Amino acid sequence: GESVGLHLPTLSVQEGDNSIINCAYSNSASDYFIWYKQESGKGPQFIIDIRSNMDKRQGQRVTVLLNKTVKHLSLQIAATQPGDSAVYFCAETNQAGTALIFGKGTTLSVSS
Amino acid sequence: GAVVSQHPSWVICKSGTSVKIECRSLDFQATTMFWYRQFPKQSLMLMATSNEGSKATYEQGVEKDKFLINHASLTLSTLTVTSAHPEDSSFYICSARPSGRAGETQYFGPGTRLLVL
Image (cartoon, rainbow over all chains, first blue to last red; front, side, top):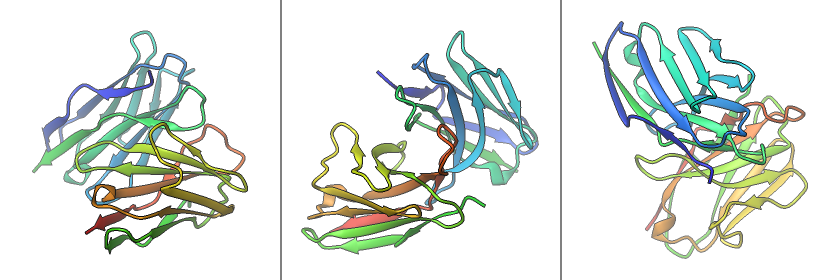
């Protein structure tokens, strides 16, 4: 079936460290992946996306890596800040390509 | 750009009443909008896909007669929870995908917290 999971439910880092959040997906036919950030009581906020024809994509302080061989997606956050504390979800397109399927989420806690 | 709003942001209602939640794309048109439900400390679960001018597509296990969706314009979709019960209490989030850009990202609203007493 379609499912997207995350390796770790929580991640705690010190301010200034680099953070890596991982995600494993199951649908080998997915061609579009997105990382979202969700702060408490708010809707998800788009961070970065990547298509299956790419292995890496960089944004401002964030990098997404895609390994299609092992169906693994990761989000790297450089110089993590307290404002980065939130729940991070990876999402992939469903088999029909019409909707997004969300993973379980990783809670990132950044301490000063 | 790409702002999505929801109204109300939170609502408390009595069991048996109906509640309507609005989702609007403020600065873009959205042929397709999506409705999600999120329980505490859980992920977002897709409930239905709302297409402008046609019937919504519901995910397996979601009662279409209980969760009525109307997408009457390119900027507005509504979700009506009919005969709400305490188990319907949840965080309801909509998202919108800009028209003409199939496969592009969805932009999410801030969510509506529903509490049914």
